[in-house]
Amino acid sequence: MSVEIIGMITAAPGSEVDQPTGAAVDPAFVTRMAQAHETAGFDRALIGYFSNGPEGAIVSSYVAAATQRLGILLAYRPGVIAAPLAARQLATLDQFSRGRVALNVVSGGNDADLRRDGDFLEHDARYARTDEYLDALKRIWTADAPVDFEGKHYRFEQASPAVKTWRQPHIPIYFSGASDAAIDVAARHADTYMLWGEPLDAVEQLIGRVRGAARRYGRTPRFSISFRPIVADTEAQAWARADDVLRQVKATRASLGLQVEAPENVGSQRLLAAAQQGNVLDERLWMGVAKATGARWNSTALVGTPEQVAHALGRYYALGVDTFLIRGFDPLGDTIRYGESLIPAIRRHIAGLGGVRRAA
Image (cartoon, rainbow, N blue to C red; front, side, top):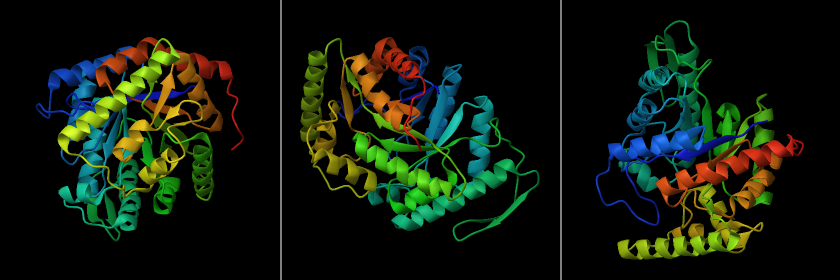
């Protein structure tokens, strides 16, 4: 089975090593990033959700217009836009992009971030709302007549299904969250379940939980995993780059007065627990930035030559992972670098495995 490779596009330059200080929207940068991803051979690019940043659906439309083939993985938070309007908005984007849109459903893992957008629901209630929201979207997308809906969180009458998605039966759903409440919603709705870059044994255990939950609904999701690869011509050079990244991350955080805070979401808690086991796990899974930042997002790295990192990803493939989300600490430079060396190495290595995988 072939793999899907996803990158990430932000609306302006910046990462943990270089916090953005300019305008929040840099159209020229978005065009460069979008076209660099397409040239590099990425299948999709994630457009993140930020309560203090540009709106993702509009950024996605700009990316779609700047490219011909590149797929878009739009991070989307239930509870911000009413489901009937969201169904039309997303279907419209899918039509203009000719089926290049997928939805990364983000229920939210930080209370302060959610409250900036007026969302005050507690954790488990947010996932119950997400479950209802996705039911509503799918009903509208797949309906042949106006839709009535009444639930605990949403109620509407005669919602129009006139704007159909390009992809049938509906836009693909990517979903993340490691709590019990999240996994239950993922089991019902996720076409692809997304994990952060944990050690192999933890990933195997979590995949098993999700597979077991999905079987209860007669479903078999795909799996995605996210890393921040640091590659170079030699392993020593790659580890030197990792040391430099960590130095820059710490310097940037110190200049901004940022402190490491205990994360609220289960995914970050899992990453931090893994980081307590050591700075390097499974030979080249580097936990340095995760530990330094409180692991509040995708922050673990695989470090080595392109071939070494591809081999490490192959071990996750053997566990059932079909999608790799890879983004660098130097966003544009690493996107180009991945296209030159890492992405070809990943595709060669996975092809060479011949589909050998561990039993589900």
